[in-house]
Length: 243
Image 1 (cartoon, rainbow, N blue to C red):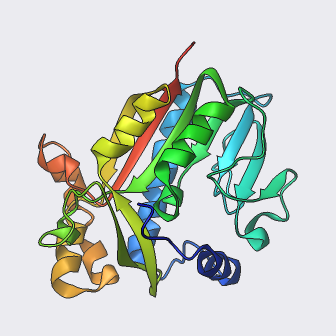
Image 2: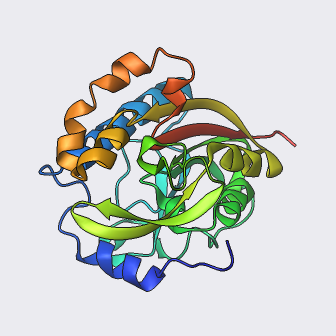
């Protein structure tokens, strides 16, 4: 991964200048956002998160997803978080917090696809308290969009789309993300895959809005053991070990 880099200044400018990260006019990203909200709602119900919980919200863009607690927002795009009570302009690869400080972690919106996932996962593990939980979302390489090119590769920079704008991001295999979590004492407790068929439609038509008309297939493919793991997006719940 050292031989290639994402232009972070370009990413910072892109997100600072966006009117809306989740524009209603973009069906693909609207569905993505809906899936994140639904998953995080289930996460909140399953784990004990209170108003006194300390939450590290990495790449938050100011969004707290109605998770209770005291949020500490970290983002490279200052315009998105400067209104928050606790905000820190910086990288997910180097969090400005003490060890074992947070009760809950949140890193969604494909934040790690702009970063070195080993560093990000290491930092998440470092700042979480023992037994603390976190949600981590990423775009994976085991997606129909990458058939014939980067399908299921460990890591590669690709040109993708972001609300109608070309964007360069890393894609990763689920196995390498899981291995990094295990390396840093984070046990995967739950996983959710979405955008299953839509990448194949996008591969054919090169139009994310047209492809997003096929999100209904997630409900069907979700029940087919192998096919449900071939997806654009993966969300994990991880828990730090007690040691």
